[in-house]
Amino acid sequence: MSGPEGRFVVVPAAYVFLLRDGLAGPEVLLQLRRGTGYMDGHWAAAAAGHVERGETAYDAAEREAREEVGVEGLDLQLVTAMQRTGGGEPIDERIDFFFTSYTWLGEPRIVEPEKCADMRWWPLEALPDPVVPHELAVLRAVRSGTATPYTTFGFRGDR
Image (cartoon, rainbow, N blue to C red; front, side):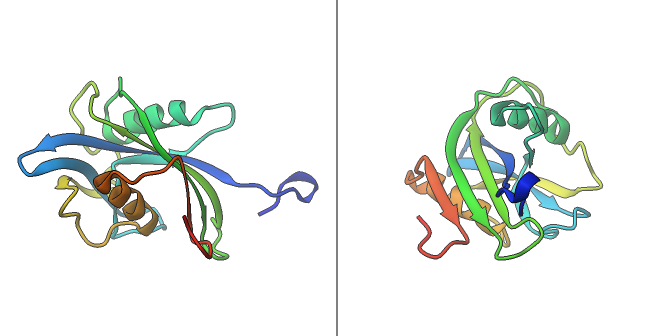
């Protein structure tokens, strides 16, 4: 992608993994995507979306949680910033900011049924299949405690 004057441009996005303590360990709230044109039929973060002009990734995460899950007042913890490429797909260069939160106000629910076929809590040790691949990589790192401040996905020699 290129922007004004041919400069390289990336698309920033913010993701929120709502977590809770379950009987068998930590659980994550995931949505089943539909009608979006991207990874429909895959489980994904309950709240995620583009960071808008003039908005911080933290603000975008709060906004997406409110718009997509109906919760606010999150205690956002940054897990990782992921530089991602899709190998030539229309959305081929991204910077994704992944957050977790164990606390929020409100009861999580499906707010956009045209984009979400289902929403469920899943144990981190028993995630559904399929999960959006780059999100699965982050969830595995959260589960194992191996998340790093910066990660890559889709590049040769990913970290």
